[in-house]
Length: 95
Image 1 (cartoon, rainbow, N blue to C red):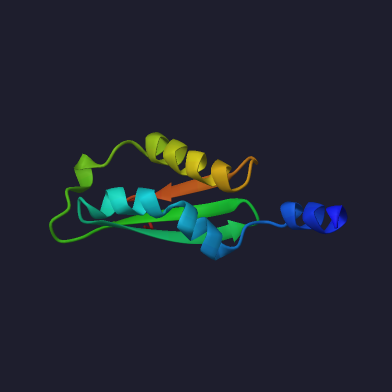
Image 2: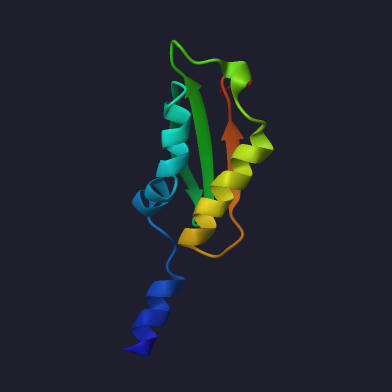
């Protein structure tokens, strides 16, 4: 039984678990007409793409390092590990 629990605790979080862990961040962004898209880039990697709706103010977003830190806090609650979090904001080249 202990080996089964140990094996389960070593499994990386599912994309659904990651999305759920970031729901509150998504909700905060949605309040200002931004949408958060979460893409898994590996077992402990995510790309967060923020897009602006018609009434959003892209220059009103907090700096990326703050968004990254908030995301890392939520993700660390899911799995204590070193997460690789990439952020793409409206107006970024290629984003």
